[in-house]
Length: 274
Image (cartoon, rainbow, N blue to C red):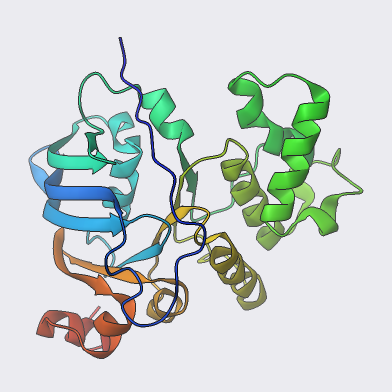
């Protein structure tokens, strides 16, 4: 019998400014957590507490373990041959790598948005309705409500409400990415993982995605991997800096960017390498 992970409610709209996440409830906790590709550690004994309802950015140079750590949260690394994990990674105190965990139920609670928009070659409506249908919602009226609500949350409804039957591949890149966000939140997840969600977009579309992250903040716990440090500073409450698989520093975004505790962090943020 697979165990289901039940996530408690999170605060509606956490405060911004100062050390915003101080005292917040921890939702995702890593303890000496490592991910291996064969014998090579892509993430090496990382320990950090990601607070519920906030935006946490993961920064660092290419190949530092950012995306590997992100994908570990919803066990997408399970799909990679030879990949294994050690140490602890938990949601609300429940180990997600425990053998009894229901991975399908876990992924229902954790939406994922990738670097390149990846809408299905289906209608706009069917893209958003895809997840709810898989999870048992078949009534057209209920699906319509979910689709409208999700598209509104993704700031896309007004642009597509008159062409829901059109192929999603006809949307612009920025619209496609917002559609993917709508698809992710249609199954009512508690967590949104975003792997460089704006890196393939133009500046205007990037700004829309950043605004959307701000609007979704509080209703979801968001973890975003980004190579763009200015973006991390703009959208996140907490920042984790990885280098060669190791977590170098984790803390309030304002402090990490203006008063980093580690010289290594300062050197990266000021452009001395990376």
